[in-house]
Image (cartoon, rainbow, N blue to C red; front, side, top):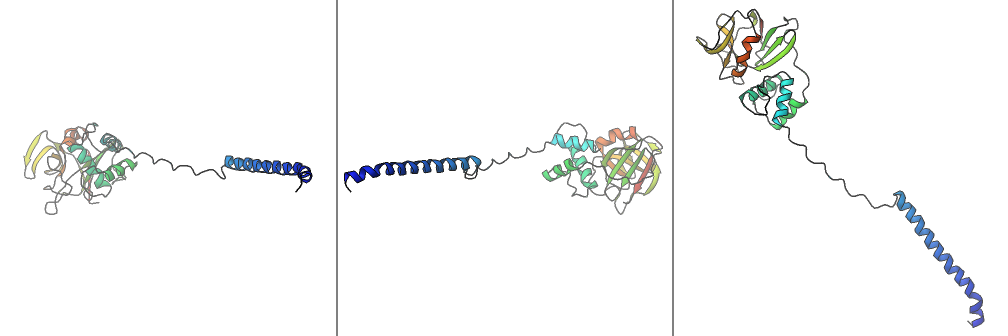
Length: 236
């Protein structure tokens, strides 16, 4: 190619190169716009795992048991015999294994519960005591409202607790010794049978026919259950 021909074609070559640069710039701009819209954006990093939930505190569980009307004693976060009796009462009411221990699954079940158990005697007197022998629990109603739920131990199959509707007719303060054993603050409902405090309130029936309640509950129980209070003891 001679110099004259090259001179004539040089403007066309320059225009071609310029057009190519414009095309590249446009493509880059378009890609940038797509990236800006997220169509070609790099994947976002995985979200951080949420921190593990804090363990439920014994204090919170005690507060919930108290709200559900179980007798936990002082609300102090201290897992003692009173708390264990309250946990066992909850387990009895809800058909759970009767361990009395505040395991994680038991705590979760307690905190998830928001309803009270149904009454045994729908037409019972406003202030009354209901004892479920099947569940081994006592329900104390006052002025038509559930006041407390207690874990109890009633009579064995050899020395059963009488069933039926009775009334508290006699009470004695402190420890008493009878043919049925040692009774603390007994509230008698028929003959020598009483609701009374005991140092031994196991998960199952173990008494000579009386209804044993925990010692801490026996301290306040007589004040809430005066003479004449209806007592209903049911097999269910």
